[in-house]
Length: 136
Image (cartoon, rainbow, N blue to C red; front, side, top):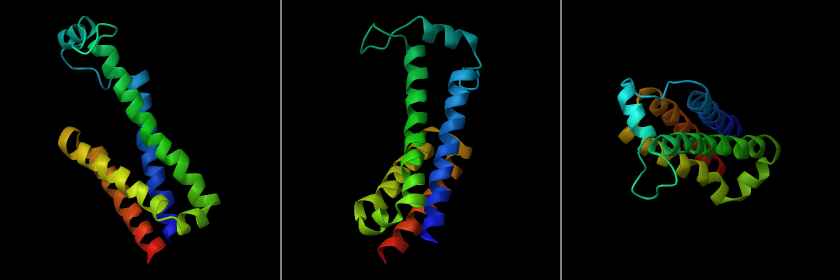
């Protein structure tokens, strides 16, 4: 059962991350409704550096965020399927997805919207259940 829970939680992260990356790079779903806002983002830099624009930083942050979710899936799907004993023998590897998912859940609650929050919540419940079963 813990294997199924890990696979389910990791798959949710992989799916959400992949959809987010596609939306970021190939659609206008993360563009502001107000075109003037997008133009302002493209024509100004963050205070941190003038080497980029707010728009490029926005796209980059969204893309790297997607890759983080996809990385969790890319690590934990093969671990759960092919190297389950490593998860059984390591408190760290069994709890890491719980910590990552809990962090994403806090961000989703504070800054995002309902769909990623619900998906991450389901994944977190799966990871907690798997960690409990692995360490009981």
